[in-house]
Every structure is written in C-alpha cells, then in structure tokens.
Length: 528
Image 1 (cartoon, rainbow, N blue to C red):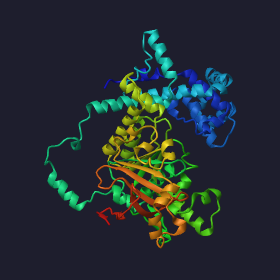
Image 2 (spheres, rainbow, N blue to C red; image 1 turned 90 degrees about the vertical axis):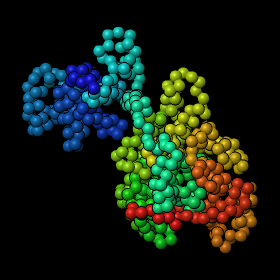
Image 3 (tube, rainbow, N blue to C red; image 1 turned 180 degrees about the horizontal axis):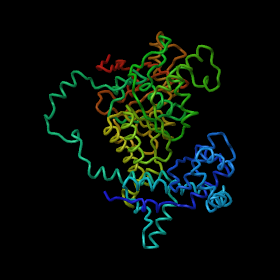
C-alpha cells in the first residue's frame, strides 16, 4: 500500500470552514448540543483550531450557555496554562480569535459544517492509506478536473461519500473473493455429515407468532428471505418489530401463566431493524415495552395504566435495556448500505435476524442500479429483481433470516381473490428470490361468509370477541410441502398478541395442519 504522508493529508483541510464553524459555535453554543450536528476533535487538526474547539466543548459541559472570549481566557488560565500563553500572550492569535467571532455567519453554518465534516472524512480515509484522488484530487494540475471534482464533491453528503468508498470496497470483494464451499460441490461430498445432521438437528428456525406459520415455513430459518405484504393499517411495521422482540427479548409476558417467562427462542439473541419511516425512539421504544409486557401500546402512550399494567411495563422497560435489537433509520437506502449495515452488525454483535421495513424503490437503489448497468434502460421490475436478489444473498451470506415488508396494490385492496404476488406493490419481481411469500389482509365480508360453516363448527372453541380479524396467505414456500394456504387468526394490533384460529386452502376449505412450537436450548435443539 502506498504510504500517504502527513503533508498530503494536511492538504485536505479547509481553514475557512474551520474558522466559520468555530466562530458560529462561539456565537451560538447551542449548535454543538443539537443531535443534528456531530463533532470530534479530529475535525479540527490545526493546533490553534483544536484548542479552541476543545475549550468550547469543555465549557459547555460546565453549563455555560453563551461563551465569550473572557470565558475561554479563564478556562485556559485555570486548566491549560500552556495553551493560555499560546493564545493570550500572542497578539496575532488573540486577533485571530476575535476575527473568527466577528466574521462568523450563523446563516451559513450548515454549508461550512458540511465542508468541515467532509474534509475530516477524507483525511480519515487518507490516514488509513485509502487513495481519495478519484473523488477529490487536491494536487490535480488540470483546472477543469479540479473544477469538476469540486463541483461534484460540494454536492455530496458525508453519507454519499461513505457509500462511494463502500461501493469500491464491495466491488473489490466481489471481484476477488473466494467462493464459499457451499457454492460448489460434487454429488456425495459431505453426504454422511448431512445425514447425521438431519437426524440430530431438524431444519427449523426461530419460533414465530403463529404455530401454524412455524409448521408451514418451519419458523424463521437461517439463510431464508421472507417477504410479507400487509394492507395499510394492518401492522406492517408492528409485526416487523414484534418478530424481532419475540426472537431477541430475554423475557416475554405469558398470557396463560400471567407472568414473564424466559424466551423460548433463547436468552442472548440480537437483531437488526432497518426502517424508513418510524422515529427510532418515540415510536419504536413504546412498541418494545408493549410487545414485551403484553400491555396495549395506546395505554402506555396515553398513560392510562392500572397498577398491574404499570408494574408490567416498568419491568418491560428494564428488559428492553437488556434486549439487543439494533435500529437504523435510512429512508434512502441502497444495496451497498444494506450489505454494509448487515455485515457490520453481524460482525460486531452476531445478529440472528434482520427486518427491513420496507422494501421499495428508493432513489438510492435506482441510482446504484443505473451505475451498474451504465446507462442501459432502467426498468422498475429489473431494479426490484436486483433488490430481491441482494436480500436473498445477504440472508445466505450471513446465515440469518431476512424479513422484508412491502405495501399492497390497489387491485388487492379491491379484490379479495388477489392474495398472491399480484398484491405486492411495485413489481412481482420482488418475490423472485424470496423463499417465502406472505400477504396479510383483513377478511372481507365475502370471505367471512365463505367460512361460516367452519366458524359455526368451532363456536365452542372460538369466542365471539376473538373472531378471525386477519388472514396470512402463504402463496410461496420454497422447500416446504405446504403452500397456497390461509392461516386465519386473531391479532391484537395494540400489543400484537396473536391467536391461531384455523387453516383453509385457497378455496376456503378447512385443512388440518399441526401447530408446532419450536424450542431451542443452547446445549441442543429440540422441537415439539
């Protein structure tokens, strides 16, 4: 690797941006407290700039709101006499400090902040030996190249710069990676080991909310890509989070025993939620408390809890702190982001499952696909097919179940017979690489009429208030013997408590399917 010198790295410093940011922080110190802006001392590599930033940062920790030069003078005099002398015994440095405050323009803070952080990121890449000249070459001789690069660089965000280099890294990995052994073999290779494994380790994954679903798709299996399409208002985001809680929470409320019990899926699982809409704290955290405690979320939000419910929610809040569900919010994700994010959490936390809420044509996915095909015709179905293929490859590469959620088509909302891939908004090609395809809808009046004989026969078992309110339509089940089946269930969207009712085929005739509970122990796996 070519050694990059400090002199070369220091060329990627924008002194004007640094001065403007420091001056603005002096004029309005609240800027440093906003979550919108992130700083660290590496953003200010020049000695005088770094001293000023660190001083501002430390003064804020002492609760000083409006920082004056006198505050900096006092702080340095008491804590860092050496730096105090550097500034206040040097007329030029003191003049510089006064000048940056005088020249600072709060209205332009965002512009200079962006430059500061982007240059800091470029220096970080250079310090790791990564060549950045194809994006921004400070030493370029041709003025046209310099102008074009700067124009492009100025319009990029920090996230876009990161993705630019991430993509280069992924392309290199794909071009030179050695195939995993599972990608090629000769008939008979490792056959004896497979036979032994099948006898001792039945092919089931994590326990899901429906015992019928466990039986049909064999739980949340590693390496499987599951796509679920839910009608608007029927809990698409909620079920994405509920399944993560069911796998990752060490304890869950048991409605039969009226107590918290150890999670049947294990005590130390981690999961990843990639969302595009929900607020990661205000909207998601109360769901965690609700799904762990079994208390309806509205009661938590509105604070209408009785004493027993309050006790359960307080316990759930503590359990949530133990639980390892990591959350990312990226409305404009692309394929590189999905690969890198899953890889990072798999490597750092050994996540056991990922949920993406939701799978769609983002501008990031489209732009990345356009770059891949280099100007060829960009068709929506081909872009979604590429998204589907990458989701499946991620599930396989990292050996985890990958759940993706989509919205429904208008046709499916109008016609209760449209309950397969035709219900998937965007394109049926999104289902191309999926191992399991599910659509979830509220039963229509016509459908309830079709199952009246089943309801009448089961009225002794099914309480009137617990009539089926959702149907899981399993239309694709690769590797499974059961498909084109409807699971009728009652699902409380308030706390996502789910009760299986019965199953029918696609023609609404009753069928018998076992209700399987998957029990997983650390020492061995047992299934019943």
